[in-house]
Length: 324
Image (cartoon, helix red, strand yellow):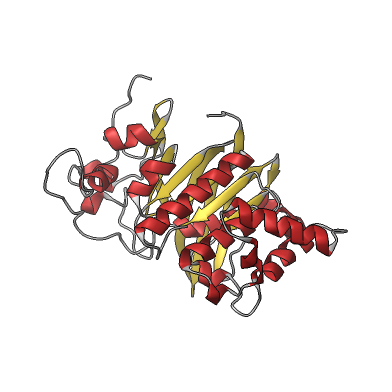
């Protein structure tokens, strides 16, 4: 994997304001995304995954506010760009495949016009013939016939709509792609086709990619590294093989123990309790009320996300440092 950093996120904080109360949906999150890498981000619903993605794209609307931090892409802080600069950056440098393809495609506009709009918003001087040729090439790249360009979203299957969203995301060949639950609501066969399409185009572009989701099996097959979020914070970042063979954070261990294994027969263990409300987080480590190894110290201080090895970070004071 290329060790050049494509995107560097430092101390990102995003809050939702409810009356005079602040809900910290993304709380002091930092990570590096390397060129050509696939970084998976997992966590329960409400852990902050989609809020993180929308913050990087600068697509939040009140009552959500970016409260601090930076996101460095090509030497520029995305969070500090003027509105027009950020508009030009979207799709050309950084693109998003949103949750729910049907909700992101205009149901009354043909696919070709939606793709043409994206091109015309960023490129001037293209002829209709050039745009049409580019649309045909993009549809072919994601495994769709050119005839799809003349169709409306409702005429496409779920997998076809998702591949149209992938084509839209790569229309200007960005260096970073964010895929927010790209296979949600699809059956397992179509999921595989969509993920293979996404992986293929990412490799062709040599783009870095963030894959957000719940499906640990999908992450095991697609991601190079995995980041686990809990209650707005990252609690573990690890190479994918190390994570599945030797998870370190207690929450990560419980996630793994809840998964069926083709290699051994064992009882599946659920995670007791539920993720706390962001309005009423417990003191200290947010996971301590559900943690099977929590001690009194866990209730007193929020553990930092620290290196326990050169390639692994864990936010738990009970995890010892390891030799690299």
